[in-house]
Amino acid sequence: MVPDALQDPPAVVQPTSPMHLPGLQPEGERPRVVVPGSPDLDRRLLDEPWPWRRRLSDQGIDALVLATMDLSKVSGGIGSPSIGQALIDVSVTANLERLGVLPGAEVFASLQWWDWFGDSPTQVGDWWGWDAINPAIGEEIFQLSELWWQQTIAEGSLAIMLGKIDANRMFATIPNAGPFLNTADSMPATMLVTMPTYPNPAMGAVVSWNGLDDEGLRGWSARVGVFDGSNAAYDPSTGQNGPRTGNRGPSGLFDGHWGPYWIAQGGPAWTVGEQSWAGTFTVGGWYQGGQTLLTTGNAGAIDDDAGGVFATLTHALHAPDDQGSRWDAFAQFGWSAPASDAADLSLAIGAVCSAPLPGRPNDQWGLLAGVTEFADDASVYVNRLGSTGGQESVLEAFYMISLPHGITLQPDLQWIGTPGGGEGATVDDALIGTIRIQIAF
Image 1 (tube, rainbow, N blue to C red):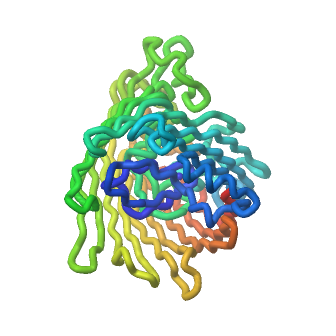
Image 2: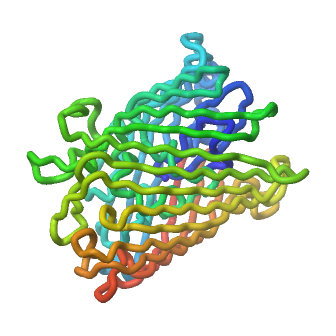
Image 3: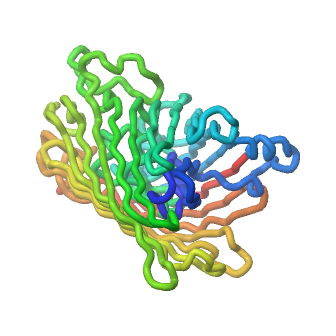
């Protein structure tokens, strides 16, 4: 899941991959894709031995290999596990306009491999997602997660995206949240079950609009998308939700129970005073068509037409040309109908400081707090110990050390209160220490 500054205008931002590494790069002519966590070529390993890659990037093709390893020790949770995880994301962006093929067009592809060693990553017992690279499906993944084409028209104010897309790149994301491990920095807990996102991106279409001012740096934006919602759609032939969309393409898209997933959001961006502190606000809603098996309940209930609303707020507490420490604040909120979703309310707030120390311009540190409230209907949700309702709380702090040649080292500490919620029998609070090692090639 992201490392950004400001989302929406003027860029069509493709934030959150599971590493959470976005970044806004204004471009006045038209929206453009910003690959999350994609450091510039000067900050990647093997740039010097491979100078041809810089020439290729100048011509319109950028290839990035992002390798992430998380080594974690948990005190509490389910059995105080020791967990190792690795994710390799190979992404390629082709700017077809720069290549002389088609004005305003770009193509993006992402191939992902994830596996774990040591104890199971599910033994923390939480709901929200204590580590965003953990797909939480209990098995190794190797898949072409995304392959989409984006076309901008109307002088760059309108963009159309088609293909296999991670919906959290475009919706409900918080682009200035920084590299927190917990998924609370990237999306509401109320959207985890249905949203077509890592590890289950899906075939879909997204239309984005940016209303920019004369400087191209602020205004209103809106986007709407429809996706194959099969991953959360009930299949009467199997008695389960699915099949999983992350490891397949268009096959089965219109097989009669594909459960279309609709989502839309919009809002303004602004600057404040002479310092030009920049902010954004978005509000949106989602709708999962068809039936969904409530697998987290103890009665196997089936719900019709689940849905909810969400909102995000970001604000830079510094001017764009500041050279010293820079603070960014963010918040997100989600609500879903208690009868159709295990988590019916969630809220997260946080702040990230860039360049926190003299001589360390690329380091970051941050603080995050979040809370999730669970449905108290046992047919909708019960935790691992058989109780329902309750809350899950999250506190996280990290310091990311940027080393030469595309390497970062990130100590991270999380506390998760009553993982998975519950009123009565609850999982022990979890204290999680993690070292994240990330290398950009």
